[in-house]
Length: 197
Image 1: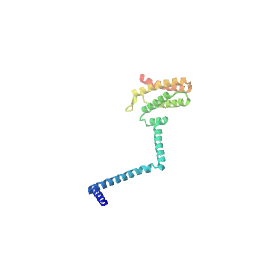
Image 2: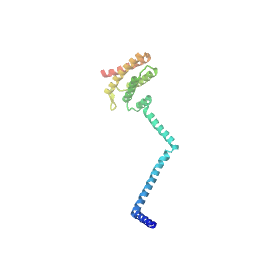
Image 3: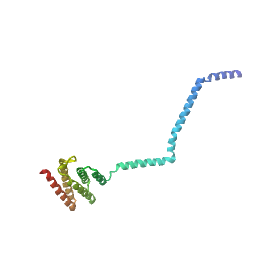
Image 4: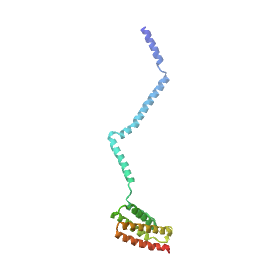
């Protein structure tokens, strides 16, 4: 009986042996899985190398420094005097130079909140620069550069600016600077007389 049982088990085992086609498909699947694991191991190896503990801290520090310096670079306003001086130097004609200087003078006057001497000196300096450029303008304009209307408008706007600057200086009791502004106003009023005649 034991022999019969062994014989039956052998027959069952023969029935369970897969065909050659099945064995071939199993081999392909096994090799495909092994190759995929190798690819995953190879592709993960660079990641492990870069982010190994010994490299992780320096890589993170460099990344933080780059982000921080980029933020600081773009968030800070450039120093105005250097920027304005560069813009004036690069301007193609006297009208543009006078306009840039005048806009900066207006910006500084509007930004002045208190009467500290440093901010007043800065305003007077840029106003003196503006005065110099405006007095060099040709009142009739220059062909291809600026017109008489543009020049007149700039002179009128500058005269209004000088009036508001003089009022601000009177409030802060800055007589020395006030006298300078009065001189500027006299020059501008004589230049504006050209347009009314």
